[in-house]
Length: 99
View 1: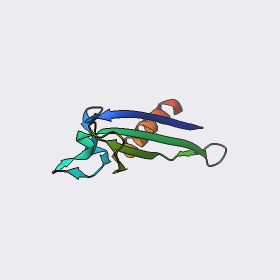
View 2: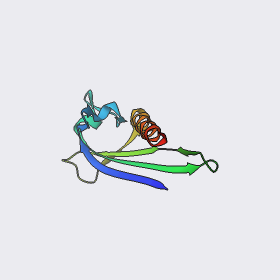
View 3: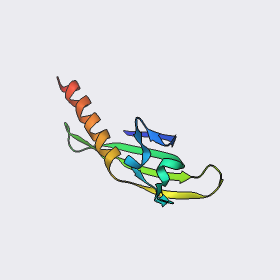
View 4: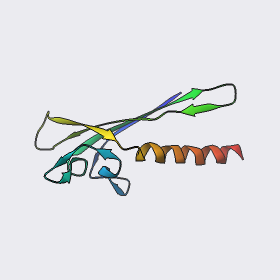
């Protein structure tokens, strides 16, 4: 099973600035992730280990684009915060199901 999610974000993801999760470089000292439109894609396959255990591997891809420059994009990297948050949420949900 593979979970996929993708969305455009501008300045924030939830209540945090995009630069908290994504690094797209800086433009004049301002994190690009906080000033550009950012396309974030999450892919999380559930990988069986044996009959009763599984693991989840999450991959984050992101691309930023300035609204006034159509066609020009900047590749972004994740700093791991989004993956960590997703892992914590999945662990909480798994614990609820195990009860």
